[in-house]
Length: 512
Image (cartoon, rainbow, N blue to C red; front, side):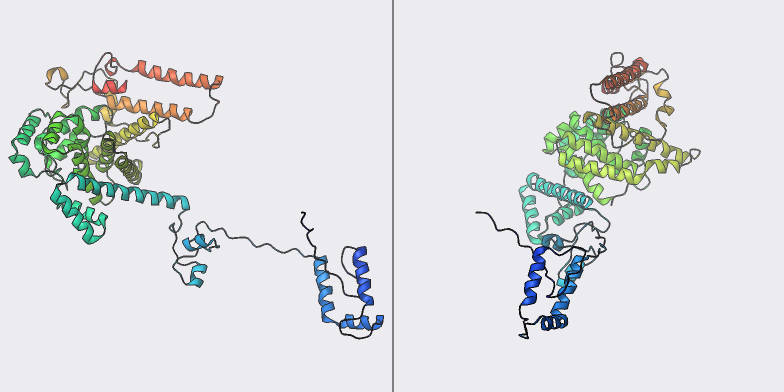
């Protein structure tokens, strides 16, 4: 069955009137008008043509119809008003699919309806930024809930019941978690007296102190372990990570501040950084494994928990020790398989790094001032190590590093001279390795070498991800060959002491 044709509304002229318009009347329109003129008017007056004409001429309906015809026949263009674009609508208008004017604190629709007006995004914030902010808040909240769940699982029966009781009384699990952390009512590790009275832990601590070339006090920097274990962990860090994959900390200044024992006066050592250094080495040190076996607790996790508590109390303060600590604890959490916490630490590290603005801070310092010169050295070493770490990780994921090569000069390794001049291996204290009792040899100048390699990797990855040439084309092969030759030249230009085949050290193994 076919549908009837769409009716078209036609406005006819009044009887006896000539249609005015730009178009001539159609035959159908003219016939209808003639028929209407011969019929009597609606008022019942005479059927004569003159009477009909008079009535129709004075009828207001006739005039309105004539005006209607004229207006329809000669349309006038209307000025179109610009529609205001609102970036973010309130929640009520979004649910009702109504047009929101974006006024704050209340839009016009919500004001008329007398309802609460709420915007998902802050003023001046786009929807995408609001979603990212909300995702970060949810990730942080999720990490806090996981931490609270871990506490319930790892604490004793009485402590777990106390946690449940507090949650039921307050009704706010996050508040309970903060009260446990800040007030330290439930201790995360054995107290100092417990570690002293336990003969097994005392022996572990004593042996660790004997194996340490760098001896530093544990207090006031950490409450997790004692002097012996902390000293061995610090010695291990400066023998491995700080001379190979993350040469970020100026050892002499760090140890000097740590031995002074003053948190307020220390500038290049902090409780956050000490706990992070211990956390990164705890999974690989035999003494730390024995400590975990005796106490039944993961020592590396205890150090990370201590870092988290200290970071929360720092109120977002951005310093070189804090930034380096967050990078290290991100690394430690990744080793432990805790990617959720690692992602959170990584985000905090990059956020504070951007707020610190190392290039601007470096430019404000005076190299002729001894205090400023030390700060310039520490900033230079830390910034280049962070760039190297980021470049290395991004290279594995086939992407360009988020941090470009720093504009700060390389002031470490005697301004790069240690990487050029012929030098032998040293120990962690800077003594000749052959005359030392240390088991780990160190190749001086490694920080300069890995920084130069990071710059070359950054340039290579920029080309590989640029898409400037078609993959597999002659031009693409030519350019890849160029970068391959650059890498080969870089390797050949290295002194033999930086090549693993000639000098077997942690740094040369990592460089290979």
